[in-house]
Amino acid sequence: MSLRPVARVLSVLALFCAGPVARAQRPDTAGTFPEDYLPALKPILATALRQAPQVIAKQLELEGSMLRVMGANSLRLPSLGGNLTFASNETAISSNNSTRTRDNGVFYNFGLSQSIYHWGALKNEGDKARIGVLIAQKSYAEASRMLAVTLRRSYLELIVKKSLL
Image (tube, rainbow, N blue to C red; front, side, top):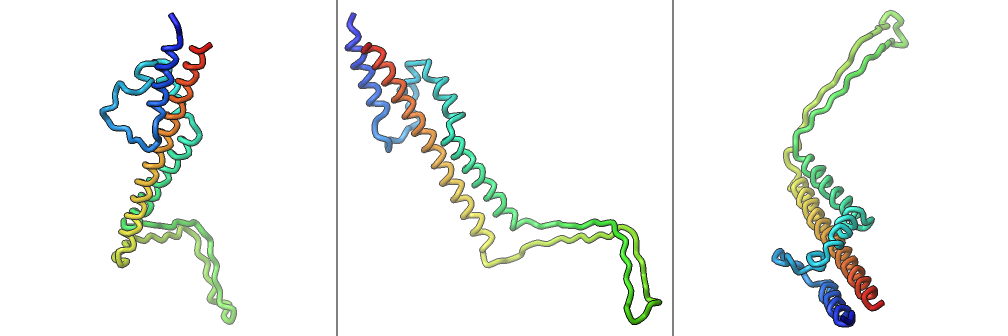
């Protein structure tokens, strides 16, 4: 049995899977990827998608944008703050020596505030941060997809070269 037909089939399969980058993946694509027919490719893809630097960078970018949403939305929430200190204070008036006072103890200050109205600025900041999350999600998905396409292509090229040997 000759390996040439197998090599041709695998090379056509590699070209089909590597295809145009702009082609969108639909949810009904189960059973059409090379890893569905070559089970050794699945753990390679899973590890690469977990450990690839470009995917990790995009994931961190996504997490950062989600934190920016929380920060932007937190400006609309009430704020409670406080200060608690233990001190020893001594005060005196330079022209009158008998007015010297000394205070020891705990000093505190607590405050509650709420932003009422900023002409929609706070809401717009939250909306802007949410748009940033959508952009980061798209960027993360694109980086993951590009890595998977590259790995599939390389794996299938390796199989074709091995079969030609």
